[in-house]
Length: 635
Image (cartoon, rainbow, N blue to C red; front, side, top):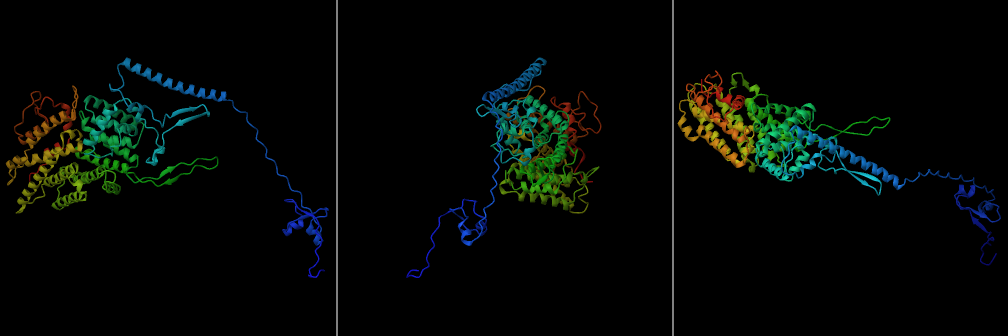
């Protein structure tokens, strides 16, 4: 012990730390660092504590990974040989298709029938013969040894149903008609200007070109081209393809898509341009209704099935994804309602579609005009037809004619019509098409009210009210024909069946006002204000001028719709003159002097251009029945 009082230190013995994982059992349990003594007597801690130093158990060696057998490398020559075989197979398929097409064209040339094509070269139409979704481009990369199939990228605006939609076979049917891009674009602009403004059943923005429409909606494109072509023979040629598509694809093969439905609505609404002997609008309307119901467009979006892959032990399950109807689908369904109402008003064959809460919802959504202001126009047209359908529906008609309309109901309907006008934006209240429908609907309401012979009693003072109602009807007719006269001659080509039926109904109302024999009613003053015969002559002249302005090219035996309108208007005038003087027929027919009793069209001499087919078709028109059977005379 030294003077500082500290204990003497034991001499340090040499030792070495245990390797990783080789500490003794005692140090491992105590979680202490293990130091082995150099003399091999164990670790320093066990020696100091006087314990036996137990060595750890031997560590189990890890199993080495078994290496997979290396596949023999494929030589570059082998890959190139396989790619050459694939390329040769693709070339042989293309050669077979080309040879079959050439042989078919040779056979058709020998038989005298050739495909309908234009003499002018096609631009983008040639790309319509195959679809990239069905026939993708093939690119062979010989460097990497890969075959690429190039398909168009999916658009963010695609409908959820597009993933289940295959290539439309209608595109192949339309490919026989080759129309140059410049001509097709001009016809599409004509359709936007003169047709859609009168019946906005589809939205075609200016960004959509004719080639885009042909690719996306080939059937609608075909109908539009048939309606807007200036060559009448070409129009009927395109109509033949339309009928083949309807009969083959829809009736026989049960093909159903929005393109086919829009084409049917368009073809039916302007069916008078293709009518020969009998009207067929009602048939097309019923086909379109069945197609719309098959596509479930009459209700909100159904659950959309999603597909899952199947395993060996688990069957595929279906879940539902919420899907709301698009504006295009709602617009199409409203157009279907409008078209069936037009068919009912014109021919009285099949009743229009029923008004449902879903129709009311679609009208409310499209009235906002979020995508185009023409949606508001379509909604207003549907509302006006709802009123006219109530006046002429089968439940409101009796065997002897329409049911009498009370004054309370008469004023209520006029109030509904005023509500339609006030609900429109101020900028649209003066729009020509809306004004045309508002004035025409008002005229139908007043006509239905005056048709009820039991409306007025024999009490004192009712005669003055009667004269006031007649005066209001005359003013309404004048306003309607004023709106019709504002239609440019270049847009007369877009007049549809509903517009022509409105025009004919206006002629019938004016005829009743010009010929009504009633105390206090001055027919001479009515003739000075609105002479129905003078107005008919004016419209005959306008139809001839419109045919020249539009540049329609007619052929022998085929006349355009504007030229066909002239004999129809002349026939209406002849019928009115015959009705005005029933005891003195206009001019007896030299070839048929035997008039058929009860047939107003028999025993009259018409112009040479009025055919028997035209006379037969007029017997189907409802306006003729209204003029001959329903009178405003009091009993």
